[in-house]
Length: 329
Picture 1 (spheres, rainbow, N blue to C red):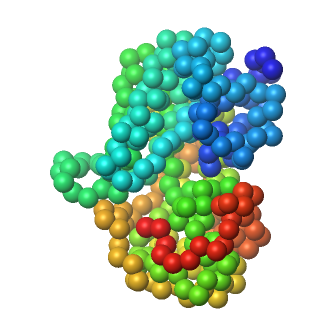
Picture 2 (picture 1 turned 45 degrees about the vertical axis):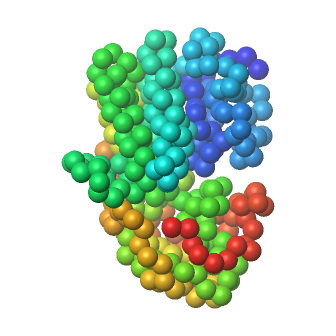
C-alpha cells in the first residue's frame, strides 16, 4: 500500500512497534487517525501487531536503510520506542548499537529531511546518573541506562542546532498486557496464577511508580496532540508515571490478592540486586498540563486489571505457568 496523507493528522514513523509499549502505541496512533509507517528489524516477532500492520508501510532495516526510508516516506514526526535491554555490562556493545548508534543515525537523517518532531522513549533508571561522577559505583543495568541517557543528550544538542524538536517521555515502571514474559511483573503474575508452592523474592522495599500501559499510551497521544507548542522550545522531557510510589512488596501483594493465589511469597529470600534503585516517583505535572491524567492508580483499579485477566498474554510460550524457582532479579 502506498503512503497515504492523513486527513489533518500527523504522518508518523514508529520504531519498536512489535515490542510491548510500541504495539499498544501503534493501536493508539491508528485510533487517532494518524498515518503510520513502521520500521522493524528482520528478526522482530510481529505477533502483537501482525494484523494491525496489514496494508500499512513496513520497512525492514536489514533491507532498507534510514536514509532511503525517509527519502521514500515523508513524515512529520518520528516516535522512537525501539530499545535493546541487556543487563550484563559485558555485552555493552549491543546496548550501544541499538540504544545510541541506531537512533542517532535516525535522528541525523530526520534533520536532513526536515522532520519536525522526534519523540524519544527514555527510562526512569537514567535518574541514577544525575550528578554521578564515580563510575565505580553500582548502577542498575549501567550500560543500558548510559546508552539511553547519552542519546537523549544528543537529541537535546541537535534540537538546539536546528534539528527536530526533541521530546523525551521518561517512562516509569510500565506493566500491562502483551509484556515480555521474562520481566518481573509478568513472571510474578504467572507464578501466582499457577499457584506455585513458594516464590523467592528480595525484601521488596524498593519503591517504584507502577503505571499501566494504557496510561502510557494516553501520555504519548497527549504529547502528539500538542506538538505544535514544542516547535519553538526545541527540547522537553515528560515524566510518565502515576505520581505515586509503591513498594514492590505492596504491588506484588495486590497481584497476589487479585488472583486469589495460594503461593507463599518468601520476602527476603533473595539478596537485593547490585546497584538497585531504591526509590523512584514521576513528577507528572507537565503531562497533566496537557490534560493527561492516569486512570489506573488506586488499589481497586489495579486489582481489577489483574483480576480481569487483562494481562494474560496471547502468546502461549510466554504464558506457560510451569516455571518455578527463583524470581528473575
